[in-house]
Image (tube, rainbow, N blue to C red; front, side, top):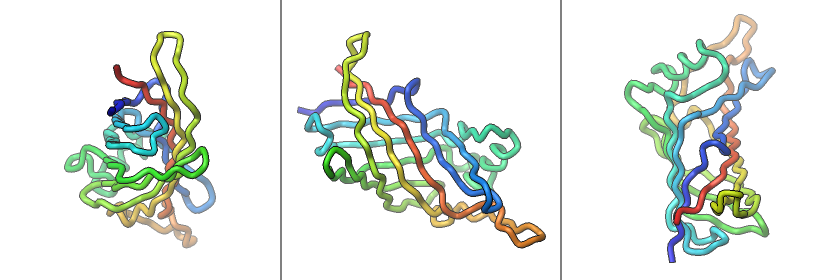
Amino acid sequence: MITKWKIDPAHSEIQFKVKHLMISTVTGYFNTNNLWVETEEEDFTKAAKIEFSADVNSVNTANEQRDGHLKSADFFDTEKFKFITFKGTKAEKSGDDYLLHGDLTIKDVTRPVSLKVEHGGTVVDPYNQTKTGFSLLGKISRKEFGLTWDAVTEAGSIVVGDEVKINCEVQLIKLA
């Protein structure tokens, strides 16, 4: 029997981190996103479908000027590419945790990625909704996805690092 789940946006956050000037880290979020999961087993080892999308126009780094630059053709090019998507292809259970494999698409580039997944558990909330929580960690090379804008300071420091760390806290709601 297939069990369907959707993201609880009020209790989830999709976060990324990237080095700035190679001395500090900038954190950003995608405030508008969707996640749908269909499972064959309660323990998520047989996920029939995992589909995620983030509205790139919802990027938020707590700096309006930087967010505008990220939306420009230098980075996400939101005029042409509205969403970042991830489609899960396989979930492997490892103890209490998982390794989630899938295809990530940014702009017009799709590449395989793997995310470490920690399952926080499943509970029934006070409103009689079954919820389950996950922490996901991974990293990608932004340049492999066509996010190649770069600059160097007069002193030779790189302005934006290539490695992007992905850190997501996701709560799913079981659909009836």
